[in-house]
Image 1 (cartoon, rainbow, N blue to C red):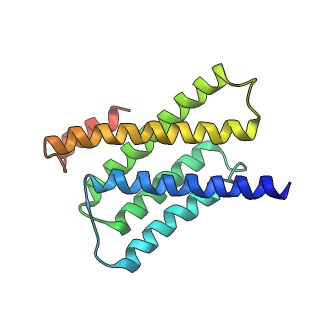
Image 2 (image 1 turned 180 degrees about the vertical axis):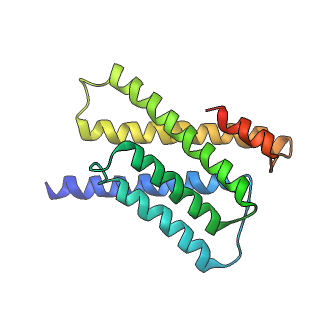
Length: 166
């Protein structure tokens, strides 16, 4: 029992670190990091703390979790990266919308094909790993497209269109 709990907590910590990597890799495409280490640590810590809270946040309604996630991601981006608030807001909304869509699709696929073969805890972990890997692949594709064309900033018109894509 204790070994299962240790393994589960270790896997959760690894998944949170992977989520932090996705956050950094995505926003590094569009913004430069601030120089002060204490601000970087504070921004990353806020993001990590919310990810830890989400592990046990089953008591909150889904729409509240989504709203808080968007706000926390925006606050973390504001603290860690330099650049305009409007662009950070747009890229935060796109980051969360794309990630949530990938989680939804991977959840549906797993529920169709794997629901009766996998224990519920393993199902959640497997779904989280798959959604994060798919999101990483999508970030690689976005990086290839945006950096190949030198796109690091959008006008208001294009920012709104970017949000409407997901």
